Image 1 (spheres, one colour):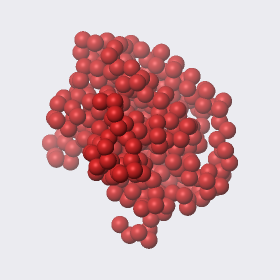
Image 2 (spheres, one colour):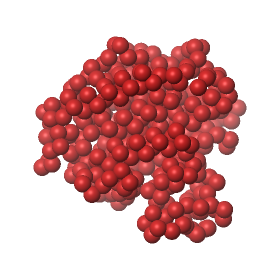
Image 3 (tube, one colour):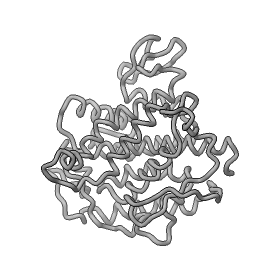
Length: 332
């Protein structure tokens, strides 16, 4: 990669907007109107609409997965470790941002709201991957495409590159089925994304926890990372490769108050995919179990990557927003 072409995030002085009627046909345009974070009424409406979406979708998709029936098909699939074709039922579409003409488009929302919406995407993932998921992921992809990582950025160049490949996969059509190798790959994009999402999330977190962790997970001499499994701190030079511990460390020790609060709220939604034995406090352990299952070739639903992807989106938009505010590009 030519370093002269790198555009560091904190130097960007424009809002990125994505326009178009079809998510796969959208193109970047530059909007010089500055965004503000004063969107509390809009956020309350968005959150209310997503709650309504869950209420109206429960049992209304006409889809049953296995013996467990919570009324939410993707939640049922994950609870039973079943592999499913990703479904996109058309229930309660008017509750989504993309189906409500009175709401701004996803690309028109400010970064601080996109941080909050990233958590909501995991909540409504119980039903399906919706157009709102795709719109959020596309907005994040376009942000990454127009801002690259570097040594002085919160995203390193290699993580930035890998993230783009992950978003390419999840935004690629998975409805193409045929005999050619290309068509077979396209029909398995969700499955492949599952293998990419966890190491990319882990790499991003280690980058942000670089005061305590090296990129290979080694705890630095001055590092202080808590080991949840044995209730003690890792010794320096120990290896911390537990995604549970890294997520916990990032939320409690690295993230600022605003992001930490959103991550905590996100854990409440993640826990819904774990059954009666998982609560908000043990939600990160669920992600760790999913990661180990897929690494060791065990069957699992093909949608868990969405949870990790939503955490990635949350972090990217939060740090982009924070850097823009520091640079004075928009007011709080």
